[in-house]
Length: 377
Image 1 (tube, rainbow, N blue to C red):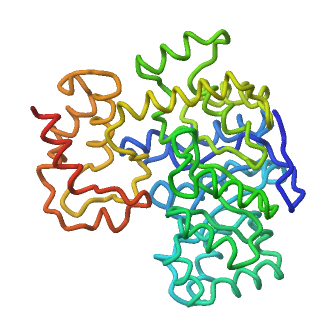
Image 2 (image 1 turned 180 degrees about the vertical axis):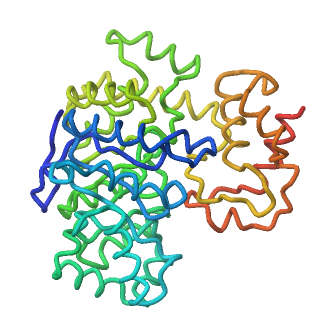
């Protein structure tokens, strides 16, 4: 396992950070954790050298922190740093912030949280956090030893990211970044800005919700033509780790084989490891993907549950997969399940709740209608 120094903090962290949002296939709608399996996966990662574990209050119907707390018994807590998050939707004053933090500490079975993040903020949410005294609360909790570092995870345009990053003395930031998102959200400009300020950056959605883990034919042809053979996952993580500003790359794993593959990959990558030919390959891969992707949904599920029962990320997943892999939607298991559950886009009443919640700011309503027409053509 490669380890990296986290910017100005000087903390050593594993380049591979285990994300605890997608256990048991949560991306496809199943948010019930098999605790025994999840605990085994977490401990397998730690035994392999992972020192950074990421969760959040809302993950997996608010059960992720509880399962992680159980996994970190028996001496495992002392081997890792924990990152978890405070969602603005659940706190409106200092009392509620105190109560939420205490509940997270109890679920995680720990006396302190290493990296405590204001969850998924943009400029509006940052202003809301300031209005209820969150910066002062984070400072007080840091002095009290209940959190070690004050941080935020980000979803929004670059301009918001620049404003937030310069508006307070942050210890760490978590951003969505991958070789497809160089100009999206914080993007490369945001990554480099944080690097110049010495603020460590943790990466989420490094595989874009898993979409970069399996290459469509036109992308795979580019990989196959390159003199060095690597899996699509390895190429994606290698590209991320090539950036010296990146401290940790989060990856969610549902199987032991995925843990083992990540451990292998992150034992071979380092900053500035890619040569000009490899970087040119990734530019070509990006262009090939862009030519086929219908919508940039990462299946984060912030839009769910839909009040009218539409499986929004499911519909978009099928739409993208049909386009990427040139398959018949009627042979797609996920599409069949959506039809069986009556969870298709024909149930959409255009209420707009999904678009208001989407951290990608996607045109969900119009895209749902277009996707449903094409899938049912």
